[in-house]
Image 1: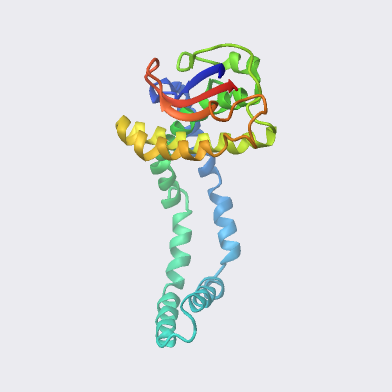
Image 2: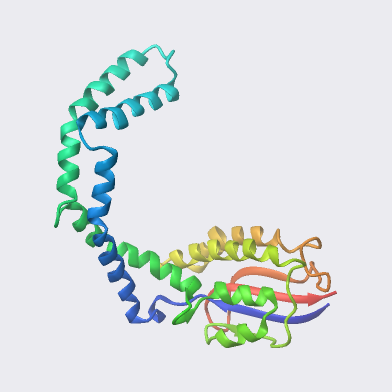
Length: 259
């Protein structure tokens, strides 16, 4: 076996996310609030009044419930009548509550403001793994460049969170480029779970057994003689999720090796 290269691409830390990324959170709040009237208009068009509520929500809901439990259920008539009466009683409440919720300063706007920190949390996880093309690069686009064999693009975005063990010319990892999106999506999926685990304080053992081992099983399915570049050895080339001893970061390790 001759190793062409080994590289470990490290996850970004939450503390490394630029502070001005909070603008994204604030823009999300402003944009969503700006759609308040449009959302209310669309909802009102679908259910403009109480008669429409009965047709669109009550009748269709009861029909769907009938399909779920079966109209031959011994209590179908009893349950349907109870649902119909309770939902009909709620028709005026629905219209009133909807209009109040989408009034200026109503529950919709306060809910958006209340959830913007949750949005920021989800955005931070995304940035830790994929980065942002304008400011920081995460491990996902870097892995894509490596798997494509595009060394110059990778060299332009490599950072101190990465551990480049051997730096030589790269070969395309797979026989066909069409395999790469699925592999990159798998890396993204499992490293996103790693990011969440890090943020909630899970230890390395938890991450290894609960996340990395499962992710590595899936990634191993892509590294085979049918999919790999014929110049590479499927028994020694690898894509794995692991923690690097040098950088101290979880990330994805890619090894290219020839027979």
